[in-house]
Length: 126
Image 1 (tube, rainbow, N blue to C red):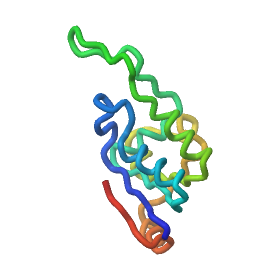
Image 2: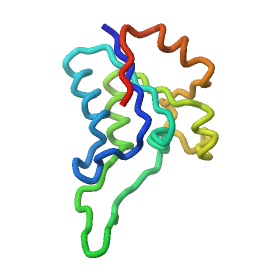
Image 3: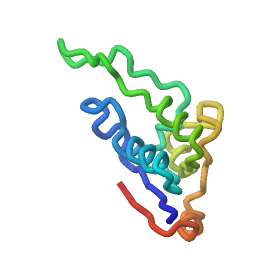
């Protein structure tokens, strides 16, 4: 079974868990042999930015000692064969041009999303 995971909300639970739970789940499923892919849309297209660094994140006197590394999580997924798409219009709306984007994240025009859905048995939106 092929499953497309749509991630729309960026940095969900990354302070509590130090990882995006959806990216973590997709990685676990992939390592268990599942055929999975990711579609980033909305604010989650920011995950495609190559140079993210949450080091030094603090709220008042509290410091995040283990900040999330979305770049590392995406690189691991890509290395393990997970295809990652991002809605092109959402990238453009946020000023995330090709020069700032992780090269392996594939931009996809919103008009082609229905065709992408047809390639999968299930679509899970988070």
